[in-house]
Structure formats: C-alpha cells, structure tokens
Image (cartoon, rainbow, N blue to C red):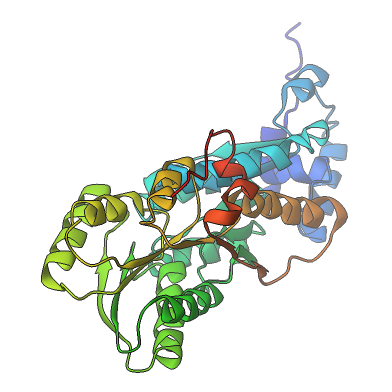
Length: 357
C-alpha cells in the first residue's frame, strides 16, 4: 500500500490562503500575525493532523532575524557602526538572533535593492542608513505596514513611517561646530562647508545648524560655499583644491562627514596659504597625524560604535520585552581636540599620539 503523504506547512498555507512564513509564525507564536489568522491556521493544522518534523525544526531559521543595510564606505565610520551592531547582537545569540547584512558600497548607492532583498528574507526588523530618504520612503512604509520595524542609524528618513532613529542629533552637531568656528576665526571671516550629499538628512541638518549658528557668533562672518563630495575621496580632494585656489582668504572649513582625509590632503598641498581652521566629523587613526600637524583644529565625534549597539538593543527590547521603540534616540556629540585624543577608542594603540610642537 502506498504510504500516506505527510502533511507539511506548505499544505496548511495553501488551505489557509496565506504564506508559508505566516503559517510558521502562527504555529510557533512568533508574532506579526493577526489573532484571526493565527486561530484559522491552528484550526486547519489540527483538522489535517499536522505534526511538526522535528528534524526540520532543528534546522529551521533562527527565531529572530534583523536585516542590516549600511554602507561599506566610508569604512572609517561604518566599520565602527558595524562592530557595535555585531557586538550587541552577540548578547542575544542564545535566544536565536541572527543579523542579516546586505551592505551597499557607499551611502545612497543601491540601497533600495538591498532593502527589497531583506524584505524577502523574513526579517523582523531593519537597521538602515538612508542615503536617499525620499526614494526609500515607500519601501520603509511597506516594511512598517508588514510589522517589520525600521530603525535608522547615523541618518534619518523622517517623512517615512520608520519606527525610530539612532544618531547624534545633526542640528546640534552643526550648532556646536558653528559656535566653535566663530571662536576659531577672526570676525568677518568667510568659511565653507564640505558635505557628502545634500539629500541626506544628516548632512542637510548639520549644514542647517552650522548656517544658523556661525553668523550669530561671528560678527560679519559668512558661509561662502558648500561643497558636495558624494563621499568620494577623489571628487572631494579636487573640489577642495579648487575651493582653496578660488578663496585665498578662506578662514575655516567644516566637514560634516567622516570623509575628511581628502580635505586634509588638499590643505596640506597649500602650505603657502594662511592657516585655516578645520573642524571635522568623527575620529579614526588616520586623522591623528593631521591633529599632530595642526591641520585639524577639532572634530565632532558621533559615537558610531555606540550607535550600532543602541540600535540592536532597542529592537531586541521591543521584540523580546515588548518595550515601545522611541521615535528618536539622540546621542550628544563629543568634542575631540589634541589634548583628549587618547580618550577615544579610535585613536588608541598608537605611540606618541601627542607629539611635541
């Protein structure tokens, strides 16, 4: 006699007219299923005599999957964010947390495709850095409508229905940089801003904060140019060289992204010009020599490692403990100058961090 075919979750999904993922979540009480659907799936499973395959259950996907889409570049910053994400995730491995990484090469490059891939991958939450928030909003709204919580890190997509954002408050960052710059340069000075992309919320708001504050604290001071470097080192270097050639009396530069090395190199090639004040963003070991030489005056540190840790912790508190996600979780930027360089993890491990003279 022919053996009876074993009933599987695909059969229950067909009878209930739902996806296999919905059946799996209903049978194992993993949430993101309405009570009506869960009851219908359980009734069908009981009626058809469904019994779980224990061997398959042992091999099934982890109980909690978080999708991550952040850039590879600028690696000085995003490597630290990624380390923070993975460090915090290890604390939850024992309850089945898996991080699904789908990185993009740089901010704003191909992120929509990566997020579509993650939405197909049965994730319960998304951690993303939105480079082009206007373009991504429909995808983020779709994720939220499916119960997939979206947490932005390092930059925001405020028009979307995303659940939360973890970052240094960008306008505060710009305000602090603007007030500092006003103390560094003489009254009536012209300064410029180097950013990544004006369409990125973090970059736009930093410039906005700087533009509001610098003229208020610097009598007669003005922002004479804003450069978009698109997080590309070669493009930023060439644009900075042209800027320095064009404005011989430029007194200061504020770099709103971690892409400061090409700016430092451009300044180094103009040794004959008067010294200008350079305020950068974040900190990594390659910046230390430029502090030593006096090219970088100060930097606004954004705690990238902690941003990554916090994003995972908020999501897990929400999924495991049912804690509500805050609409925003802002960190306060720290000021880095030569005298406190050694207090930051990114500058440790080098000898003679503070060189005489």
